[in-house]
Length: 458
Ligand SMILES: Cc1ncc(COP(=O)(O)O)c(C=O)c1O
Image 1: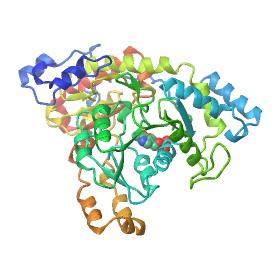
Image 2 (image 1 turned 180 degrees about the vertical axis):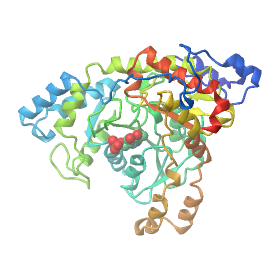
Image 3 (image 1 turned 135 degrees about the vertical axis):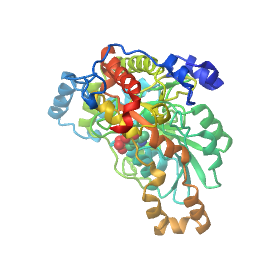
């Protein structure tokens, strides 16, 4: 890596534990490329597989996801036989037990489990008193569940642009988007890696805003000595099948403020408090005992799986740092570990003889390695915006001038760039593989890079 091409922040990030390369995006001179290009762990024969050569990887499978073993089966069978299928039947059932264990794992004082990550986020929005006419600033590069949680409260999701190298919210654009109606920031820890929470918390404090961390992809990721989800006022997780802790559909809220977490319980329990009084308007978002049974069955071994994903990611990054034009996700200073829901890279076509990303991915796929683009457009370019802005509630709650400005402010050019250049692996299963599996990924990328002059014709 050419240190002269790194900013000070990138250099610090490169030096931190668990660091992933923060490689310069500038195009090096060609002599430089030859020097930087890495070596294949195992030599390949016959050129690109898509043109008839031998694929780098064949007849091998990846570790399957979601994970299950006898613990999961036993836990579900036990719950079935107990006839305690709903959390309100027992204060020591699987949901209550999982809440305690998950709080402990994340270092939070309290946890409320929900039926999904979207439900967890919406519960937080309601519990913080965010209402029709309020605004919440979040990322356009996320699952629709993030904005659905804000829209469900009839508040306005205002999108700030991204840092193109980390794919996370750019805190400076967040600050620019604050209005007198802004009540909260909802940073999204994309790919399972922490956002720049130091800066986001500074901005929140300065403008007296709440912070709801969307950690739906970022279980157990650690930043500046804290697990994500415990840095803001509240943190939310998803346990949907593909996530690194999974039960089909499920979610959780964590937090340290007892009163606020009690409010979350009340909201998610159709407005009825732990004391049995129906106090506020609230949906019914309770996790059921079977979902928690799957989660409890999956917890043994969870730390080892996270450690393995981090170790494999470190190794993969160390191999990819020598491939010009493939730039692994930038991590912020203070990132000690990630969840690695996705292992994400930026594809820079100028290093691949101008070949389109689709041509690169096609060639890579033929080598037996599936990388994909991920989010196609970004939420700022989806049709929901017009639907919302023409709805009766929004027209009543926001002035015409505000809605017009909202329309104009939805441009997020950095997010567009990230959508166009992303090349990622769904990592929950694959990153549990062996070092040889990681070598297959890196070798295939390296091989396609070495044959980049052939890509534009495929
Ligand atoms: C960043 C992010 N936020 C929110 C959600 C919503 O979670 P769920 O699908 O459990 O409702 C997801 C799920 O993929 C997500 O990735």
